[in-house]
Length: 398
Image (cartoon, rainbow, N blue to C red):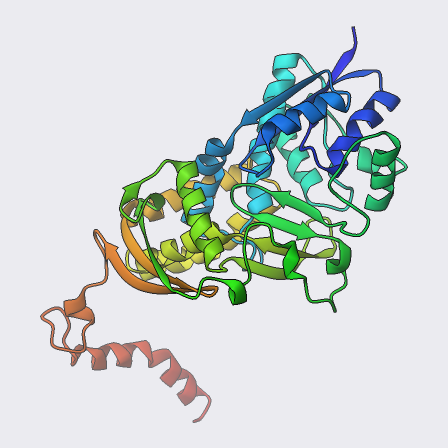
């Protein structure tokens, strides 16, 4: 009886050529596993392509709701970003997909999991860190680290030689990753920093210049930091993200072009489209500003940087990530209410905060009189607050 290997399968260039390569180089039964995290691909076509390419069995499972409720919600509550800009679309999906791979491996009695990540990328670490955390006995096969294929051009040639249809061409050789949260594009002419990226690469957004000429308002309701309603309508997790995505796309929101520091030690350039995520982060940020005290908010902002780094580095199943998330949940206990935003030509403008229990109090914050704030008290406060500065000046002979 043949050993089994579970292949992380997407139907793209890298994973499509991996099936025949595995069959040529190992005496394995190849089981393809595609975790649907909201990518646009027709899952029936992905399933059929896996079998046509030589897989003995294929799993195509919809895990998009788990993707939203497990990792995306956590990212929104933390407003987690990598290097201040990247909303972690690929990074958030990988632990959910890898978890599904381990589940299928257990179900099939497979001792091996194979992925199509390149030896230069972050995803190889994300997949293998999750597999190690969930079942360290599973062995990983990473073809890009051992085969003779050295480039995407070589991969296209291999696909053509084996009669495998792929969308990628040598003229348009971008590497793309799509899910419910974002689309990323890398490679090709983008690798040359002097090149402005071409707008025809957009898959999820349109450029701000081509966006709708009429502003539009959107109102998002959060319950303890989690979005649950949009424009007064309660929505299921996936439906809500899809709805906000469409609003963002229409108004050219959520496109970034960045040079980032990869985990494996090099810099890379990527174009990221995250229309709905950008809106949800902004709405959450606006609501949170009225609901969390200064010290907690400032500390949360610092911790959020580490939270984003852990996600980016593939350490979703680390104890530190769990601990930080527990802290984040405590900070969100009072973050309930609605935020109204104005969307226009790539911009987002706050247009109203309707928090249920805000810490902002107009009667106190107003320039007018307040029974809780006496202007005269500020003089004594400033005297004490500036005392160290005065002492230092005196000691320095000023």
